[in-house]
Length: 106
Image (tube, rainbow, N blue to C red; front, side, top):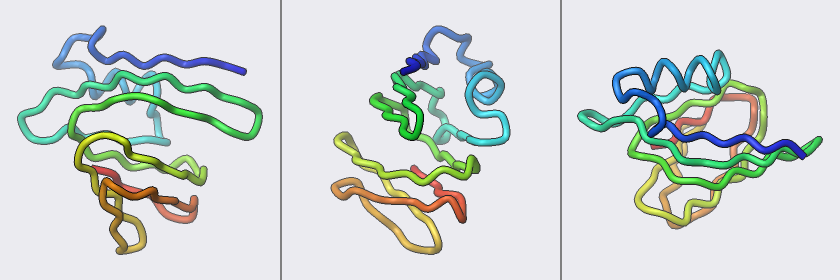
């Protein structure tokens, strides 16, 4: 098991998007904070051989995943919308994404 912690509050506010991209995103994950909002992510990822579990909090943002992994997301927090293949899933539901197309979450 491998544990990864993400705490963007430890980074200079103006450099957070670029630093997230460099450290965690590369060409697999893209994040874009909501207008007039700083990027804030506080999360822990536990990586197992065929499974990764993430628990955390984030500021309002748009994220896109291009890593080829399937996802099952349970949102237990505030408002969120996930879209994929033209469909929408709102915050009080679980959503599943397939690796065949990016999922955009807001």
